[in-house]
Image (tube, rainbow, N blue to C red; front, side):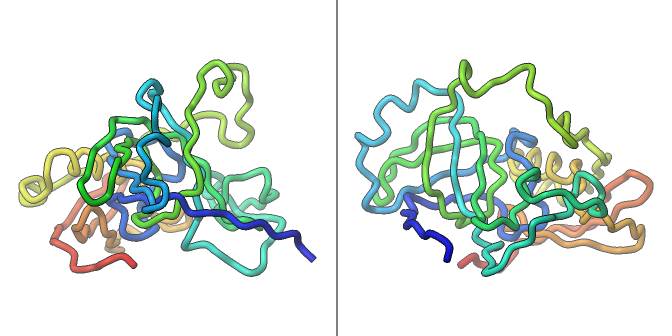
Length: 234
């Protein structure tokens, strides 16, 4: 029988991603993305964050809350390999793991004092769904966490921007500049499943309170329209 240990949720993420579709597959790929970490009431003691402003980046340890399963598979199909080749789950960062835990390095932008929520961490580059439970925050230490000679296996370098992105003027006028920059970065990474390549298919994704529809043809992602979304996260 598996040995079990209790984990405490110290807070939850507030981000522009209302669904899994479209989230970058690693943190830091789209620095224009903005998010906040709101601590649970019992962890809103300001002393717990004393000195954190001295660090530029943080590690977040969190749960793939939409990928929790009772069973697990020893092999998975990484999107980076086109979704066809199988590798061992412990040789990948797949969310489908015995323990659905994620690890993200994010940039600390600052601390926001909220009269109801206490001290809120403002971060950039997060690859996290809105409402994601966070188990811990640790400072990034360049002397220990950066290994210049490290080898990246089947993912030796960050993926290049795969697509050119075309946004019509009505969409540019609808979205605030910060969200527009972040959305463009997300779309350029090609949010479609790796096995999809249908130039006639129209995709939809929810981002920052908007429903975005787009089509991809010959390396060009064309946003067709955007409208305010009525979807609420649980």
